[in-house]
Length: 318
Image 1 (cartoon, rainbow, N blue to C red):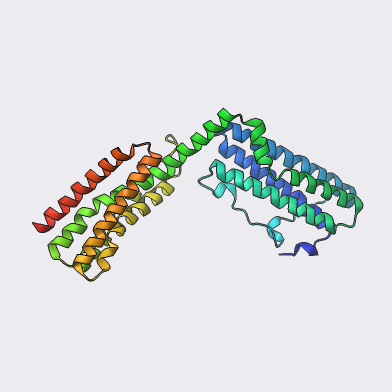
Image 2 (image 1 turned 30 degrees about the horizontal axis):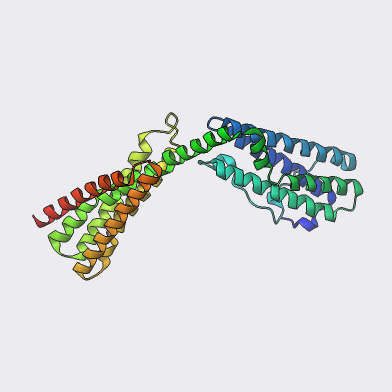
């Protein structure tokens, strides 16, 4: 890698050209990824890609005038100081907020680049071009917000934000909630059955860990294999499976860890308190994201948890 201050003016222009081309293609990728779910926002990023194309043509015209036809390939990753960006195609989940924040970051970085490059240039024409682009980019630091305001009316933006929320619920909240409920509720029976059957905290801990991890693996595969997301819009199956599996394991381990406490009665009391906290968290998630009334959610979750808990005690004491 080279330091930026080691680059010649020819190399700086070549870097600027490749950077503008890369930014334009990133915005075009944003537009393509958003096209189906957020058509208005997709148009915003197509417009931004077109602006980057205009900047690139300005740079190429000046480069040809000064250095000829051959433009060496100098990329951001070849120069120290630039932010490394994850390619759009590697991002399985790309929400509106993520895209808008990345666009704002890109514009700010471009403004800083042109400002620094302009102060180093000795050629009047190049210095003027870089200075002009710096001013343009400074004005574009909030380009995404500006274009959103120009292209999205309040109703359209509200609809897209609601669509974004629905997809977050489908792709993240639902699999996580299913996992938490399964891990927190279904593992109650084997854990507390082991507690009352053996009277040993360590035995209950081993049973709880086995049940939690086993349930996490099972739920993860079940969620991942349920559908590929192409028709339901639920996103990548392996991501949903990972979220569901981890949430299931977490839900079961929560009330299993207290049984690391040596004193049986203390461990049991802490475990019961953790179960109450887990059910409260599940109730809150259902109320916030699934539009379930708090009282109704609490009754449903509490009744199910109490039923499984009682089952474990009865089997353990039998």
